[in-house]
Image (tube, rainbow, N blue to C red; front, side):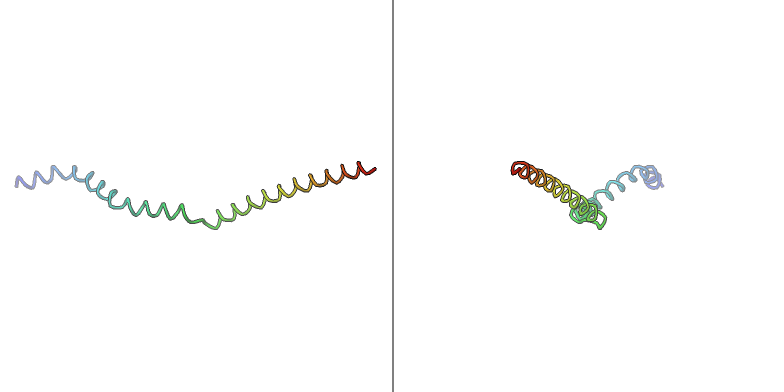
Length: 80
């Protein structure tokens, strides 16, 4: 009978232990899932990155075109 009371009294204390054991046991799985998430790219991320890349490319091409246009106008002025 005393053993039953002792076990009943210790039951709330083991809840924390079970939770900790569960967290320790599932940590490698959660860490592996996080690594996979970091190494893969979703379609929306790929689309966003592609859009950003294209905007930068178009901005660079626009700057180069304006620069070349200025050079051409300056050359034409020198020829006159």
